[in-house]
Image (cartoon, helix red, strand yellow):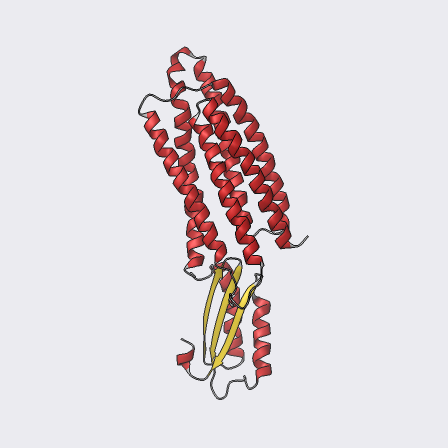
Length: 302
């Protein structure tokens, strides 16, 4: 199975699982009047739409079309990731505001036993699904696959947190001095989970934006390549070099402009190609787009 086929398989299974959880969560949330379970279901429903978007994007990017997309479709991946996490962030903030309203208006009654049963089943199934997807993704973890895994990890942690919250609510219900806290348990869990949830979308949105605006590559990747580029510059007696590198989707974009002088040891196209080959071997990431240019006039390099 190719990396593209494995990616598609993971995304299809993620969609199927999200449909199941969305239906179960929304129905259970309404039946037991639990805002937390309803939030879990709505999160899964949003995940369905976003997973379908990822599936479409993956298929579109894997179709080569050098005529209409001469530089590839690399920017579609961070754009899709940005849209996914923006939608999740909106859902999280809206749910948190609704829960805060419930907290300040007397809490919310619910069917505690049924809620605990659902959350237990959801926690175990969600954890199993995440572990299975994690195993499948070992063959190829693209940005889209990572986003899907993050969604399931978040859902799994939330499900276990909800289950723990309902257990705590059960303890409150059989303790006379704490029984008044039971109606506040459900909205309080939504607030706590929402605060925790906000971090992941914000971090991933920041990373996607960095790729969209072509921020410089991280130092751990850029450092070794820059060292090799500088070493080549000195070895061949070139005057200076200008390097531009960024990560666009799953592709490292690397552009190098060498400024040569009359006595530089770059006297043929063959030598230039040897330099390109040497630089390509230093790229610690595949795939990549490499452009190496040579000029006598500095203005063409800056």
